[in-house]
Image (cartoon, rainbow, N blue to C red; front, side, top):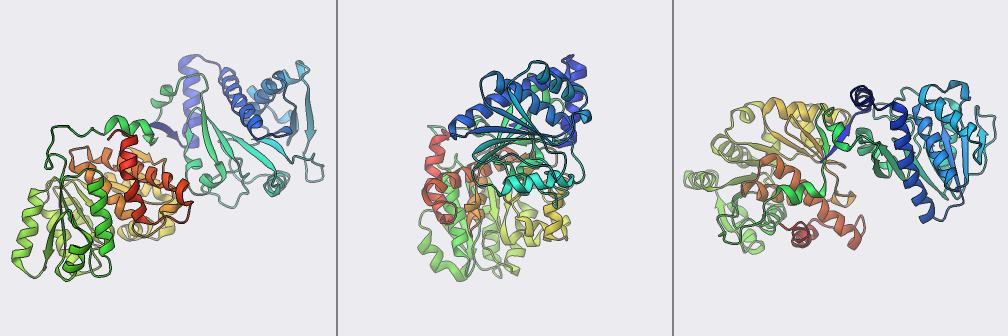
Length: 507
């Protein structure tokens, strides 16, 4: 997994790296700028652009811009610098690299844009490098900076590349204008704000540039333990099915799902679990939907339940003790049936339990903390807000601290489903790197619940299962974007590509 840092952590880590390694900060800036210049030159050629304009502020982000300008000019590119502040504002490494450009007499055009009254050169059909503000920026930009950001955003024919982070991006201040970028070159590590909400939209594709320290150096400073999942994490950490295994070795799974009007949810989570390789699956549902469940699910064993019958309750109890993992909630409905079965599962299951959908409505501090099971909760934003008794807006604004704090306090795993799904056990916090907007459809969460439960039923670590299941689920959706576009997929389409994805990961 790749390290992800909050802005303040990056600044502290870089300072510590300079102290501990003895590498001067100007060398780190040189390495970062050189790597960025190579990436930029590649995009310039691929997009058949005419000019390169580098927008420079007055801090270290501008210093990166000066290094980039120098290397591009040395390699024959036509480079234009747009200075947004007078050079007297520059300090330290930024001033050093600005002076180096001047002393080398490189063929670089300079334009001053110190106020709204200054004129701007035409930047259409150009590659524009955003080196205005970096991760140290706070507050609101000056009016002339707002104007140039708005102007560039209005131009259609352009390619914008941000250095480290799009200028003025701040998840706590959403009123700032932000430059909409095609690519963000993140120095050393991923930056948290670029991976969520507004940052995800404005950052474009994210490329991490090595700054000459090795990526592992940053790991020792990742005190928040925030990571971004990768392909290799899945292929390396999920066991391949044993050739000599039987159906019971590959996961005995009890799924409690479905109700009148929501039988499709039961079908989706059950078939996704079976497609993932669970060999012995029992699906339990209210007796009122027995006929339709028997018609839409042929492979799994079916258990029709009358919650008022002690015999049926005892039968569910027997299956809880039999199972290697339990999934409860997908399409169960808001009812006494769901509440009673959830309480039964939480009180008696000693295996991992995935709590999804309607069962989340009946989660409380008492049944969470008293359960002997290892719980994986899979709420979306609204469901998590209900559990916490707060608003959805509060969760969106503080999802990191709320999810990590809740998971740690209650010793559970939270898979919080949103535009960028996260997984946390209260210690580590993993940001999923797959998936697209086509997952915003009824049933996609049911497929996810089935995938995760299948993995954990095979004896995989519960946290690893949640991380891997979320990654694979998103990977399925990414494949379907190529086939159906971003808005025509339905949840059952995910089932069809699970075998293809498993083959790609050698699972």
